[in-house]
Image 1 (cartoon, rainbow, N blue to C red):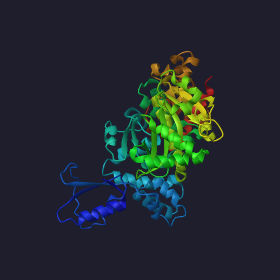
Image 2: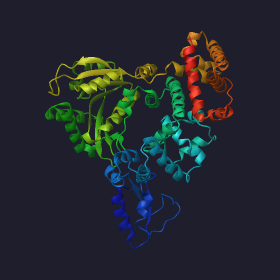
Image 3: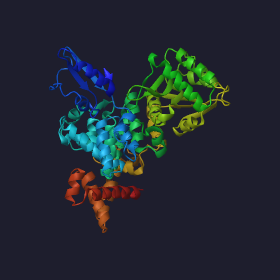
Image 4: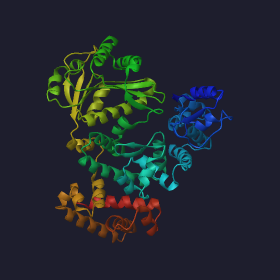
Amino acid sequence: MRLHRDEALARLTVLAQASGPVSVNVTGPLGVGKSRLLAAFPGLARESRRPLGQSGLEVVELTPWSDADIRSLCADLDDPDLVVRLAGGLPLLADVLARACRAGVRVPGALADAACAEVLRRLATEIRPRLAAALPVISTVDGADADLLADLVRLPADAFDRLRDLSVVRDEPHGLSVVEPFRTLFELAYTWRHPARRAEAAARTVATRYRQLGRTEDPVLRARLADQVLYLSGAPRVRRDLFAEAPGPVRVRAAGTQDADALGELVRIWAAAEGLTRRRADRMLGLWLAGRSHGFRLAVDGEDRPIGMVNLTELDADLPVLDPLLQQYAPGLLSSGEPGLVVGMMAIRPAYARTQPMLVREILSSAITAGRLVVSTPFLPYQQMSARFGLRRLGETRSDVYRCGRGSAVYTRRFAPDSLSAWLTRLGGRRPREEAVRDALTNLRVPARLASSPLAERAGSPEALARLLVALISALAASPEPEDAEAGRILDLYFVRRAGGHDLLAHRLHLSRATYFRRLAYGLAHLTDALP
């Protein structure tokens, strides 16, 4: 049973007063307050883990604390909201963050660093510190499979499987990822401590994911890879649309029959925000619910309370709601029989406005998986967002279905596998020229991969590109300028000779890590400028 801390306290009080022996398994994420809860019952005997399937065992699952509860732990601070945002409903993190703030720490990255140190200390009971050190990298690049992880971090062969068993790690289509709020904390801390390494890891991940996008036939994986590319290299405005922070532990799930009241309330919020008449909005809700698949998805907080929603209706001629949404554009959009989704509305409670990017990500990921997206909206900000994401405007509907004084603009886009890279390029999640150079250097000894480089065609052949890159690196290493020569030697040792990883080479060249990565970045920029 999933319980808030007060409910769990009441339940344990009842169990502690039972006449006979009772076995209770208190579960929940790291730092949710399990030990804090059990400390209120000093008379309870604690044992080593016991089998969950044991007869008579009562399981109490603690949910994350509310923002108000977390704020009560740090109400004395000048900026308690920062602690609330980073703690993600976990009192352990709130305590550590608040202590750091009281000690004078103000920079978010430094605060996150203090919290991560405590998390890693707690995880020492689950895994060796050397393996746990991979968590910041996995968090920074937003997930990694075994091959990518081996490329980013030097780890034992069984590291992937060992990391997979951690309580803060979960399986995803593209590999392992770290659960929130730990992922955000690890990324903030890693970016603050190692900005050059973060940039290097992001660039290598983007290059790898682009190659995978061109090969995979799995639409779910394709959507997740595209999401990752946008996260690591999207244009600033695109990143704000998709990845702004949401308050607390928020997730998206399908709406069920138990959510009828919440749907009605959110539809009324939607109508008020977009200047629609309530009567027409309620009528549209009835049409959505009349279909065999209503398509409503809810953003819910840590206690499963709906705080926002979006409607993603299947592009199906039998669904009655599509006629008023698409009107004269319906025949053309439905005639091909291609699968797809139609977005007709999105609503967020005003207090949770930062949740919108999570719903926009849900729309895009679902659309890439489905293959096509259609948007119908009279709301100007959503029309502008549709244009930013490369959807083609078909025009306005003839009828003002919402009685708001204007027709709905209809946009569409196909997400064919062979067009995803071009779409990502338009959104700023592109491989710029320097990244293409880095990718080519990584594949210097793999002609088949080098042949796919956009630089190979310009050079005449993969072999000609390899010779050109090696010659440019040699010329740079022979430069009389010390900075140029150091950059050239790094490129030669790392990409041409494969003489070791970054740490080893920095030590070999007697350079600090910061200087090493500055020289590496300088060398890559020099090669990019030197190529014809």
